Image (cartoon, rainbow, N blue to C red; front, top):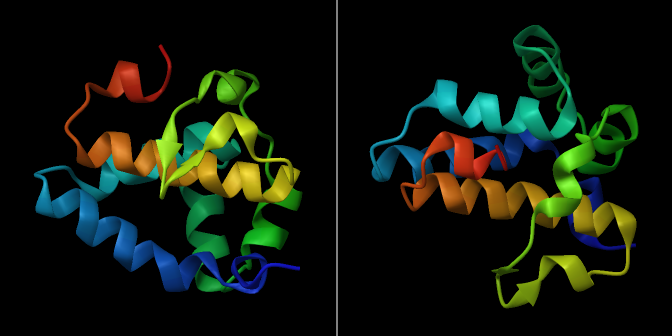
Length: 113
């Protein structure tokens, strides 16, 4: 089991937020991206952050967006569509979406609109 599986979203969320804010994006946009991927409402996302839900628990409870399979490309040197472990692939999807948001891509492109 990879260490990231037992890491809480709450511990990584400030890093995601700092990354997107450095590039002029907002917390609301970050939350929209996370909500798009997981199917969580704003209240559900806040509850997971407050409860320090692990990535394993988070994605077990998520209603993964059917368009998530359209997320392709490389993040951290790994091609997301080639990741074999389903949980790791979902985490990489999230990383890829956050990276695209931080790069300034239009929200409809980030969300595979």
